[in-house]
Length: 201
Image 1 (cartoon, helix red, strand yellow):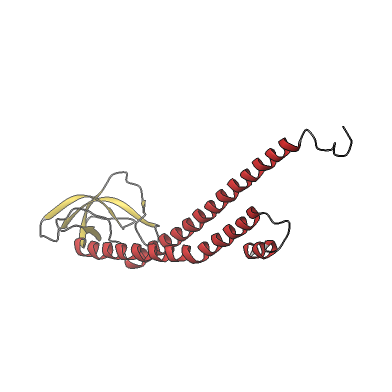
Image 2 (cartoon, rainbow, N blue to C red):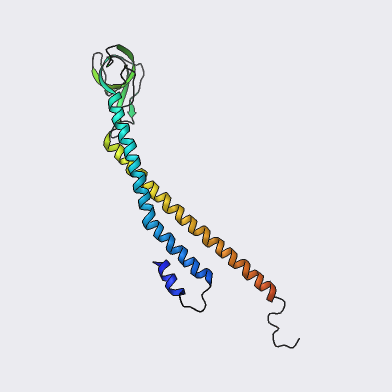
């Protein structure tokens, strides 16, 4: 709104310099770009991110399998660990040696994190593997993918708005520097004689 007011104020003002009007138009243009272009960029980036992430969700669901593992023994001295891949990011897990059968039917054995606070031999728990039984992270879920896409779109809109504002500030800064340089030149020309007008010297 200040940009519109600035243009209106300088329209017929006899003290208006060309740079004042240009500065007001630059401010108005930047405002329109922030209000119109930034949301469009954010929407496009969000939509692309949503497509890519949902495709990743689909591929991960196809390639990752939840299988049941059986505790063989607890790893000596293993503390409780927090699993960052759970929905809350606070589920405690314990490191154990376990057996499981891969989706392709092969028997597997190894050290894994079990979602058990006090695991005992023979306890069952779920793990995620690929088709050959190798451990993998749990697949990304649709809600999390959508959240990431929304954040990506919001971030893109903010970056666009910041770039526009940065461009506006740079243009105004250069105009002000040019204006000051012209003032310095004018003072240099008038400097030796200013204040002596009409003294007869």
